[in-house]
Length: 303
Ligand SMILES: Nc1ncnc2c1ncn2[C@@H]1O[C@H](COP(=O)(O)OP(=O)(O)O)[C@@H](O)[C@H]1O
Ligand SMILES: O=P(O)(O)OC[C@H]1O[C@](O)(COP(=O)(O)O)[C@@H](O)[C@@H]1O
Figure 1 (cartoon, rainbow, N blue to C red):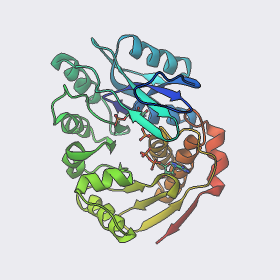
Figure 2: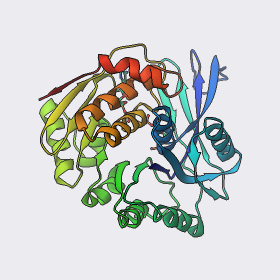
Figure 3: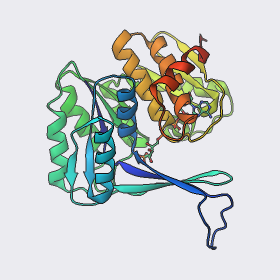
Figure 4: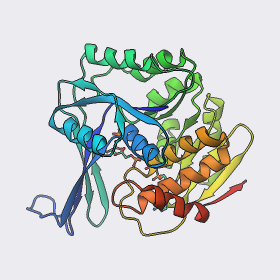
């Protein structure tokens, strides 16, 4: 079973507007509400790929109900901790350019936080856990580290997709995969890349700090995979981008789902690239057939 953990789920409110003028009344041309939050997206894609998954995390209020109803309608397993406050709403404004305004997230009580720690302790060595996304401010700064300590005691492997100090703090515990995008990698090391060698250098740094595999994702420019033995360059297929929200989460799901089946990082990387692009080319997250039809168009070379 692959468990995902989303500490700060969201309704992603996708708003299309042709011409937005700040300070004036604007009308939407169309809108769409989707369940969001990084771990939930990972679970939705794993389910599409027919990999057993259960989404864990904190969920609350009418917004939380929207998410649980959606997931239950799609038969995605969940085992959330129900919290007192409302799950957040993240605004994704698609006008001339794409603007995102993510909510801070609800307050989570100490008792609620402890319930999730107790849940992850019950995983077994056969399971994998994907920890994804930002933390609501109310949680202690070392909450991700607390989660990791509790679950690796069982021997389960974990992957983590978060940023900054929360990411740095769990690298020594040996995540199977971390997947910063270019911007997140620069922020993590407080640097600005000017050439490809910079990306290669800092990608390898993450291996040295403890990650077993690293993917640096670069949106339409594909991604780089760093393993113990080699570096691979992945080229994404081209296509019409409809909504790239969740492309990174889809990439993680594609990678870990395939890795569980084959144990082969290169094939897993291909599935990750196809899943990320298939989501970028869809309004919602990708469907299985969209992902599979892109697999042949993904190119991976050892560099
Ligand atoms: N415009 C695009 N065209 C083709 N593939 C894309 C595009 N945007 C994202 N992808 C695919 O999804 C992956 C993850 O996207 P990226 O935007 O880098 O992640 P994140 O959503 O975490 O910022 C990319 O490496 C690529 O494979
Ligand atoms: O937890 P964070 O970092 O605030 O991000 C949450 C947002 O990220 C998403 O999971 C999308 O992430 P990616 O585009 O990086 O795959 C949205 O569904 C959600 O609104």
